[in-house]
Image: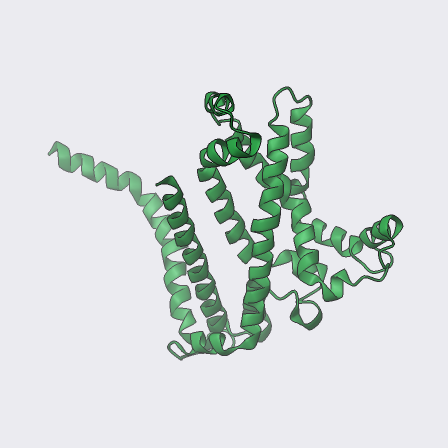
Length: 290
């Protein structure tokens, strides 16, 4: 009797959560998959097409352009942004550094600014002739004033804008991890004759590995969801679709063309890509731990 009463109490307490989870998580996931097998013609008009939406997406050159653009931005986030974040964290983690809290606030502050504001700022900074970046480079190195960041070098412009916004954000993660690295291990390695680079590779890097893997995964997921920054900076996909991303492609299919079934299929392909990235990250992290 007591066990059955405990089970009933447990289900009673879990009931509200399970109901909300089913309503706002399970049902939308199932509904979106069902919708991805349909073609929609405005509200309330659908036709079942099976997996034809997925085939049409994979045959569309525009989708591959969006995927390649998003991948380039993701590589910039992982291989440019994160090393800079780690470098800043190591500088702020030096013993005896004065004003550490102030520096941390200064570097972290750009991440508190909204994406819309950042996009508007960098659309002005990267403009030809009147843009702050071209004018500064021209004054310092004779750089051409009409260098077309916004027209020809769209992905580079996006990476630069993302650097300003997210380097300090990821720096906080790395700084927290560095502050938990055992000083005894570092001192023991130094006594054994290990130089700064050897201590970093053999002591610091393995210690911050789990946090590093988490930050990489977070950056990959965030980069593949890129939408607002290019949409506002270039008021769309940019010149020759050079700023087109996967989420922007989904938005155009669902809200400009009006085929929500096709857009749902794009969303599921994006979800599979992110699941694959998470699996690879877990495999690499497990291999490094072993």
